[in-house]
Amino acid sequence: MTSKKKKPVRKPSRRAASEPRKTVAMTDRAVLTPEAPSAAAPEASSEPLSSGPPAAMTHSDGKSVVALAASLKGAGGFYFVPSQTLPAGSKIESISLGDEVEGNFVLKLAGGDPSATSHGVTEGFSIRVPDSFEREASEQSVRVRVLARSAAAAPTRMAIAYSTNEVGNSGWRWLEIGPSWEVVEFNWRVPKIQRGHGDFIGLLPDRSGSPEVHIHSLCATIY
Image (cartoon, rainbow, N blue to C red):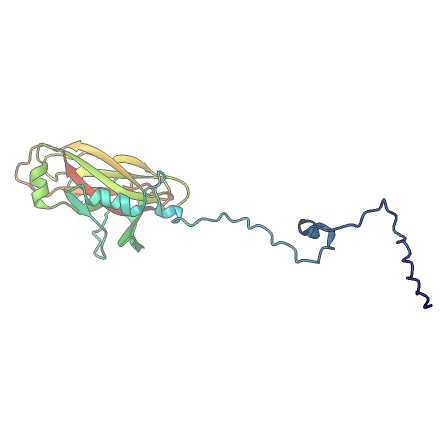
């Protein structure tokens, strides 16, 4: 009779039955895995980030120089932009041209003499309007608008005058100019033309030591 071999008896595990096997979920690995050394995070820049145009190119209400200049050019009437041929200003210390801004040279005026006269061709930076505009302006109200800014962070002043060179003038109208491009304006009722000796628009910066004035363009319209 053949004897049967006894099957070996498996010994029980030493792990206590009450001690469950630990499992690691995928979401827990970042916590349980030792952290690898990493480079220090870069410091945040103290400079503000901006994708917009520089402040010098934008009016305080958000309008660009292009939009402001277009509002002057599209108004009709007389439109002036600085060119390389500059008329003389008899009582202004410095008259020069700067780099182009949106297609126009920038007219720079500094050191105006407060005693400059506003009659005749004016003793400021003088611009003659076309003869046709002079005739149409007779006994009408004229609006002069100038696109300008202060060259410094501080505001400055600029005076504007409309002179008929014959039957009177508006006198200097002083207006404050801020560091951002903006349109400043004044209105004046023109007396009746007689012979017509040419009408002029005069620009006068504030006295010596004040910030320079930058001028992009100007227009004169009748209303």
